[in-house]
Image (cartoon, rainbow, N blue to C red; front, side, top):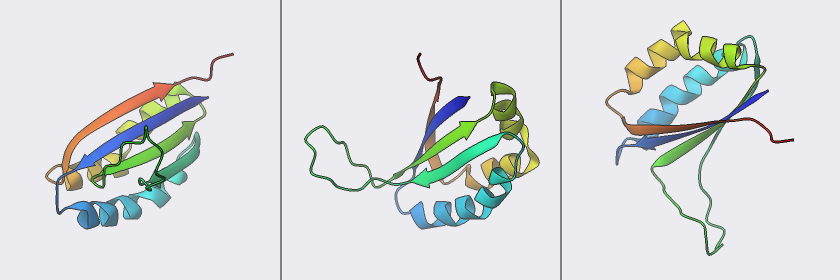
Length: 102
């Protein structure tokens, strides 16, 4: 199993535009072969001293059956369309691809 944490940094003033595009793409992603979980999330203020809040970041928590399934996801037509739609809204993206340590 592959776990992904994708941090999408959105340009100021564009969060609602981004969320509209993201929400439209989520159902297609969840139907993909090998997709176990695909959960967009945002920061909540907990008051924890180590927490870093950023209202302009959407974090997507993903689980895929395999690296092959993740790679197919990245090349799927709806993801190519999504990236085209958000190219002027997204400032930058950082991705961590993780495996569970035994």
